Amino acid sequence: MQIKAQIPNALTLGNLACGFTAIILVLLNKPEDIGWLVAGLMAVAMIFDFFDGFLARALKVASPLGLQLDSLADMVTFGVLPGVMAFTILNNNTGSPLHLVENAAEAANFVPGIANPWALWAIMIPVLSGYRLGKFNIDTRQGGVFYGLATPANAFFFLSLFLIFAYDSPFNRGKSLWDLTPSLLSWLTHPMVLIPLVTLFSLLLVSEFKLIAFKFKGYGFKANWAKYTFAATSLILLIIFFYKAVPLIILLYFAFSIVDNYILKK
Image 1 (spheres, rainbow, N blue to C red):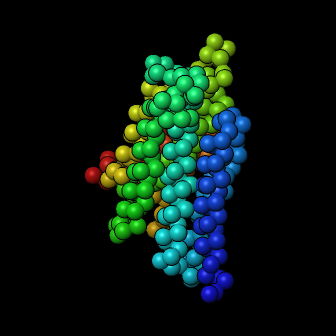
Image 2 (cartoon, one colour):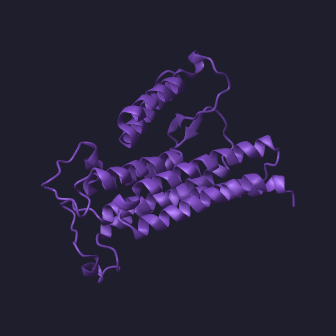
Image 3 (cartoon, rainbow, N blue to C red):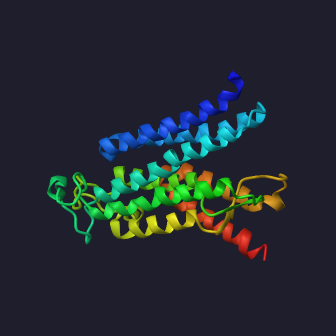
């Protein structure tokens, strides 16, 4: 067994290890105690996910095993982890009018440890992420578009909501609804908004909706105006708003994709 051939696989397994560690942290700790650590682990996993394929091509050791490992790692980090984050937000939310109990032990007649049965709605994210990743592996279509929302983009959207819930939202248990005034973005973590968002983004994962893919056949501005403009705008938003910019960036991603794929290319 060539060591060189295992270098990309080691990075892929590093992605999986980051995802698994983050899941354990989210399940066992308060969001405000581990939010940034989880974000760091997901960022490292994303770097591993990029460079495993890059190195496999550069070292000319791409293999069917690497392809399968990549999907399995992505399922953990970009499929299960965002589902666990959405579950945690819903399960620890003090927003009305969904019925919530203050003590998880009071919900023992349902499932021990689950304070809000609606939190199980988050299962849509890993289920449809798994379907998307399996479908992607056998999709032979090529081009400058993604069909449906990519799992990393979906995962970072829910990571942003997790950070907003942890550090900005008065709907987080332990934060007073009287001492904090909800910001506009914090309402995205309210159950009555988050449950529809979970549904919408899960369905987008398996949709045929055309979204911009950052694959370049050439680097001219005219052919890639949407990619360059979106990237520049996203960078500015991140500098100004940091993690709170992600929902806005996702909205822009949809807008640029609609203009580029459905209006200009009619």
